[in-house]
Length: 319
Image 1 (tube, helix red, strand yellow):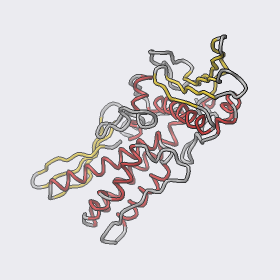
Image 2 (image 1 turned 180 degrees about the vertical axis):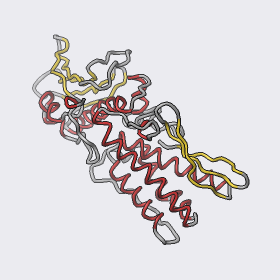
Image 3 (image 1 turned 90 degrees about the horizontal axis):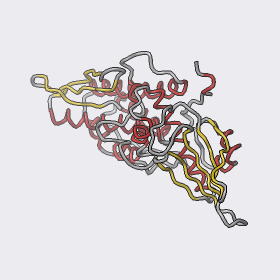
Image 4 (image 1 turned 90 degrees about the vertical axis):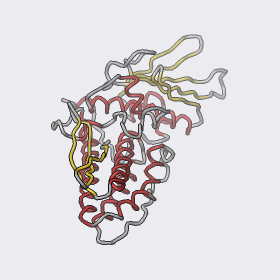
């Protein structure tokens, strides 16, 4: 995410935006305020907004609703009205991630601290902040277009270099189950990947694991997402059999207590059979809904994998 900090400059205090670039952090001055306390509060509000939104862009199915709410913030800042009303974060019916930390924190921010803080700014500063929030949102949109193609950004200063990182200010993604801890899971399984495109490949596998767990539970089974070994553990009771059907879906190259070597790789589905060990059902790309339905069954579509803001790109077409 873009982190905002303050820097005293004589009698005024500057608000600075900082984000991870290709080789070093990048910074630019956003605005200056007379009151250092108000500047610090503005920096805090902008950091929460950006951090929650970047985390959601990677891992939450409520991301489309979040970006729409942020667009309403930009419109309100550019409006001539003196006050900014609280903004309601409206998720689509059926969204599974409304209880995720980033979603809930952003809902609180939009309803309280953000409109109060931004509404107190003079018009010239409101326009400047609107441009900054819009620039941050535009980089997220470009990341969702670019990274599924397997390509990193060309510019070393692009904000896209920070996608799927464990963030630095509020520690979104540092710990916890999927999807809250997804950025931390990437570090655990694939070490410190510096390429956003490779982190996105890891993201696709983690999102598939989390989605299959939800689909299994929605279809009457039991399921968990595990980090060692990294996999979806799926159990379906069989009414006419003594033993349940047990499936495991994991990155093809991931083994217990070992780092995965390639985040841009297919996933493997195996079935554990009583008395005969495990049987490999096949390999499939994380984004291939049809492939999972063929290997595992139509139950795997019980909840959606892709969001309307996701771009599907066949990995076999990458250059």
